[in-house]
Image 1 (cartoon, rainbow, N blue to C red):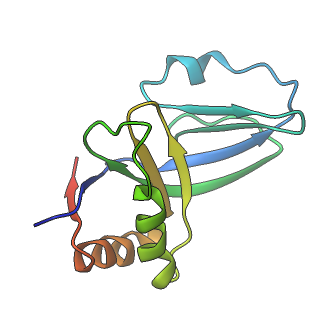
Image 2 (cartoon, rainbow, N blue to C red; image 1 turned 45 degrees about the horizontal axis):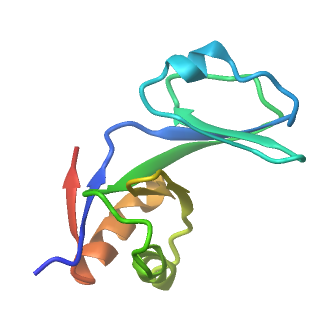
Length: 128
């Protein structure tokens, strides 16, 4: 029986690093899927690569694996276990969380390696 199910989202993502005082561009907020994080040192924006931004730095060609199903905030170890599986196969991750679920971003050239490792570890991985 599968531990959890992850879905490979169909489009690549870009991770942007911007000045912490930058205004969040309107096209980001108009996207159906985006993530924003701001600290005193940086503004980070993650969104589909079809929406280009002017940024200090960017890293393209990330694919997202969405952990399906609602996760309670009190659940422990899910992210760590998936991270361990991917680390064992030398797949770097960029993790994003919402109130309900987690997203694991992996570079597109490591997607097949990540999917195969997760399936061998008992996870179900589907395309979305």
